[in-house]
Amino acid sequence: MEELAEAAGIPVRTVRFYRERKLIAPPRREGRIAWYGEAHLARLHTIAALLERGHTLGGIAELIGAWENGRTLDGVAELLGLEGALITPWSEETPVRLTPEELADYFGGDVTPENLTAALDIGYIAVDGEDVVHTSRRLLDASAALVREGVPLAAVLETGRSVRVHVDALADLFTVLIRKHVVDSAAEHLPPDEVTRLAEAMERLHPLAKNVVDAELALAMDRRVRIELEKWLRDTAAPEDPPGTADTPDAPVA
Image 1 (tube, one colour):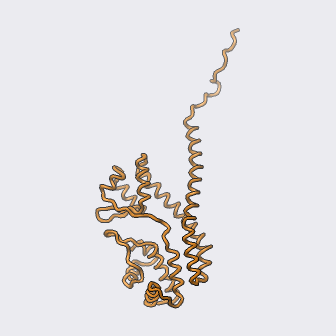
Image 2 (cartoon, rainbow, N blue to C red):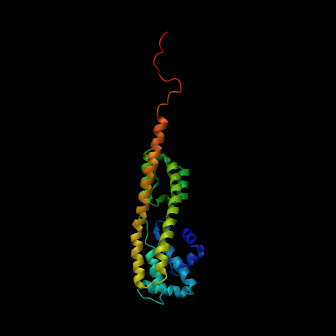
Image 3 (tube, one colour):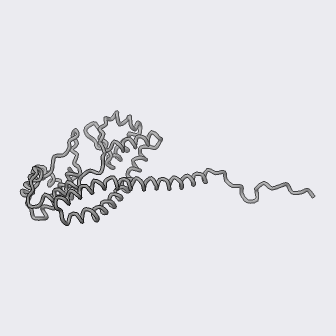
């Protein structure tokens, strides 16, 4: 809840109040962990937009209830429909619950307090009682594979921290691009068919953005590997003979 409130820019007590008024859905429970997602954040943004339009919280509750029951009121259905179009998750990550023994099976002796603290700080894992919940099956498998190849887990985590900075920047680029050229133009006028068109466009954009990043990363890796290979070959080649010491034919005897 604290992370959701921070992302929405509102106090935690406000989120709790909205929960009590049933303005946002309950979180997904996994053990003692309450998971809030993009749908919750989008709903908080929608509530803020409705408040700016002059609606009361009681009126917003009625509007949301009407929308969820298939009725439309005061044209607000378009705004709530836009919410639904924009919150389709981009990621397909599956959290993984691990006991301490299972975590050790993945990373062995690299499961240290320092590495656990780093993984918590990055957001790779959360602690639920005696278990650990990893946020992504794919990231877990990739990290374990790198460790098996001899890369220390501390280095994997530090690289993951750097990758997070770069992918956040990439996400900002695509978000601005999509908002400027797709969302803003559609938001000026939102009849039901426009909401449908926007939802379909957003669905098509998901794989396109991923394909661009995947292709650019592959091309960048090709460039960097060639540069590193050439450097490695230069560094490991036999040193050249210093000037004046090269083999020359014996001088004729006078």
